[in-house]
Amino acid sequence: MGSATISVFSSPASWIESDALVQCHQVAALDGMTHVAAMPDLHPGKGAPIGAAMASTVLYPFLVGSDIGCGIAVFPITLKRAVPAKLAARFPDLDRALSPGQDAGNPAWAVVKGDIPAGHLEGLGTVGRGNHFVELARIETVFEPGHASRLGLAAGDHVLIVHSGSRGLGERILRAHTAVHGAGPAPDPGAYLAMHDDAVRWGSLNRRLLAARVAHALGTEPTEPIVDQCHNLVEIRDGVYLHRKGAAPGDRRDVLIAGTRGTCSYLVAAHAGPDANHSVAHGAGRKMSRADALRRGRAKHTVEELRHTPVGSVVVCGDRQLLFEEAPTAYKRIEQVIADLVHHELATPVATTVPLVTYKTPDIGPTPQRDRRGHRRKRGRP
Image (cartoon, rainbow, N blue to C red; front, side, top):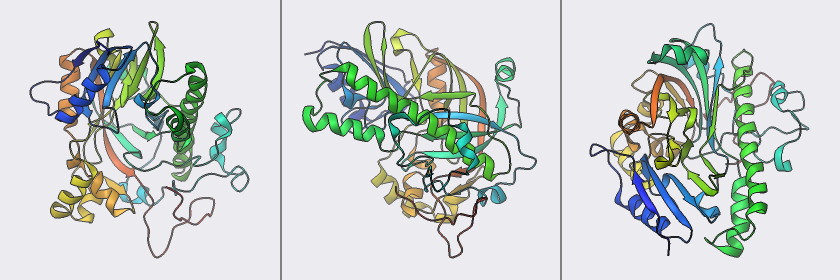
């Protein structure tokens, strides 16, 4: 049995579900595990906690999960006017995958340099389901003007925030492993890491494609990301395998820690050390299961209330069930998550972003809109 240490970077004011702590102890007992660092957004996952960084001398694919390469990127965007309702109507259908043949003339392809990792074309340029999103946001409060300036940001600027993963590629990799080895370790770590690295590169490329599709649809040019941190991956660090599942690299990185559709998010300068497995939180963290959020949300909110948030933003989501599952009330308070990171000296807030338009899935209406290339908006594969 393992003899790993566990550190939980939260405070008495933070709510951490007991099942998530149980999962941390289960992971700590795995052979080869040395240290488990739990972030303040910790919550239960499938087989392993979400919001944790886990160091081991043994590589366990299930600790990374199926969405290898999932992360959050931030892209500056220049807009003359930012009226949420008008801009929401111009978002393209990000459920519809880009086809190298049918969409060869799409200007978004310009961000692709070289081959598509692993040749994985399924879901290319799509955002996915669950908590994934593409958000147009405004820089609101700037806490560290010097740091923000180095990133090219100032209060009032606009950014695109893209949260998406490897769209089936990571799931394919994990299924191939679990079909033979279950939750056991990778028998050939090098072979797993080669496939894993493809999925990480694919996720990063897909975030660039998503940002480019939206930028062109809004009548502006795509930009390079100023932040792009993957929070579902494994890396070799200090001679051990550092698994992150819902935890962002925090070793002198700039990280966007996502709030909810109805609250701000935080751009932070992360400076986490070995006690935290060089990691920080990746978001607000769920406090309700999807089933609970759906049940409670239907009793408390209307669809229109969830499509127009208290901060004045618009949520584009034709999937009503997903609207309730992803309601802001289903998540922890982002302010408390950030306060815990600051208290434990893991990160310094640089600026907040406030949502203007949050895209989840295309709206389904009687008169589907056309994007700038004339394609009809229609439901794609989930």
